[in-house]
Image (cartoon, rainbow, N blue to C red; front, side, top):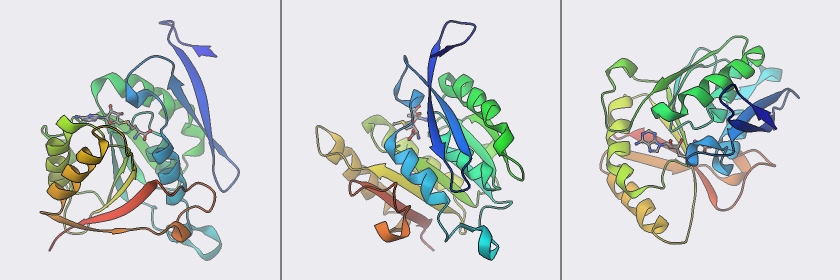
Length: 222
Ligand SMILES: C[S@@+](CC[C@H](N)C(=O)[O-])C[C@H]1O[C@@H](n2cnc3c(N)ncnc32)[C@H](O)[C@@H]1O
């Protein structure tokens, strides 16, 4: 168990890439929901490596040079994966996650050759002028869970997306408590300005997928 100069303790989640290299993502023992890697983040990170996006044997790399922004990045696992595949990534979250994000960027820098990754504060619903022009991709893993944040989250998606932006949203469908209602509210709001398609399991990573974890490609309606 590692500790930093302030006595904060971390434990590491390894995510093995298809090339055999391992992302080493620090998580905190103490903290809010963002300080651990959620299953949806693993499923999304591994989806980014599927052949549709990245197939070195046939020269396919849809990430190379792409502007990518991750919302509610938490530990930054998903954005880090995109950066190792060649994307120009900004991982964003609340102020209190910035130290963890920066630490994980530093610890995984050796795996990032052609791409780049930077951490920034982005609170949903607040000023997004520094993230304009629109991204090629917006990534979000397990961000549909908190009633009060649904309206600002969808507002931010509207501001971040141009006609060519693809949001890749991965979420775990939860049946307990208020979760189904929060999910319903998100999709009701979303459908006013966006349409989406669900990615079937045979197009996801063959090992890291699950029936209750969904991946959507979401685009602005014309
Ligand atoms: C369930 S965690 C998911 C973290 C990470 N994406 C993962 O899947 O491992 C939700 C994340 O959303 C962030 N979040 C919640 N409300 C937010 C807001 N209003 N603005 C920005 N980020 C927010 C939290 O700080 C947290 O990192």
